[in-house]
Image (cartoon, rainbow, N blue to C red; front, side, top):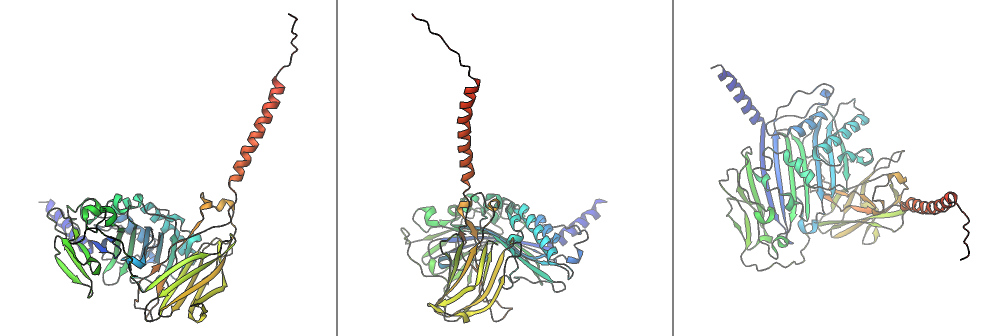
Length: 530
């Protein structure tokens, strides 16, 4: 009888913890017009709580007891008073022309991290930078990535490009920090700690389909971690993994696909912790004549030509092997497809010199209205822009009036910090805007070159964010250009080795001859007459 009160207390504590936290999972399969399809995994955890107040950072934090919220990530967020965080690790190039707008906006190649951190009115920029540096190192250890390299040399503070996607508490200020590593890639060692943050790991639920052998064989793949605070909901932690797969390559010559074909496994067990487990399949003009097996449980009409088929796998009694088949198709033939978006971007380097170069950005607007966007460039310190060479042209004619706003942050005096160029551009309808600017390639010390110096330096992708007339509204998604590879003046690193080899050879020959003369004893041998 004495154990009964203890059992009641534990039961109430467990119920209270479950009421504060909720976990759901979702798999979104979206076919594209070029025959490929996107498999987007999304695991969402909601915690009924508020971000840690920066005034309490100087005192020890109260112990946190979570049920489904990943404890390791929750401790990092509270330790540095992070209200909103966006981390992505991607490999490959997202094809906006054929695949359209991604479900997760951050699709730039490499690693990208930006966060809104709360601070007090007395905190200086140096204090915030120190917390940012500690945050990147903590995330680097958590996800086994080189995020610790996101130091002051690669960190900037954009003003327009990265607005909060959630709510920021109004009783204390917040500051933004942004950084990217274009040469960072995502691999199995990043997926393993990612899966460990899930309550059911990869043993059951939709996460059991995360097969690294198939995901990392995709044309494009990436993982993302998004944390934001919603005033009426709480802290939302969204873990995502996406992969653009090619069923034609996997099956041979057909668009037919199934769970076993894409992930080499089917869904067997449900995650009992998840309040919702759903699989969504997009249906539209690209899937005419296709049949889903099994038949959909729910249909959601998105537009006149597009709908979503929803499967609830929360209580899956047995094997769930979703498949899509084309009844009349014999073999698939790749055909040119029209662009999926009215706006397309292209960025290239110009010039062949090792001391100077140029950057050309082309924005094509096929729409019927003006397209206003914020253009963000973050460059390492050795790429130094010449602002007086900035030109805007439409159909070969100068149109400097299309530049509505310009902010430029040059490298600091020590030339060890990134430069940032942020401009608001207006692109007329049915036209192409060409933006060009020249830059100088600074000389760097031979000790600052990477091991593969002759390969070149990776430059981060440019970010284009649509600008709305209403600051509180949303008029589109961010777009990323491809990363660039710039060639700097590189020393002849092979020269020291050539000198050493030649010197060693000469010394060896000289030493051998002298040593032979010094150690050999010459005697006269008289040969008698025979």
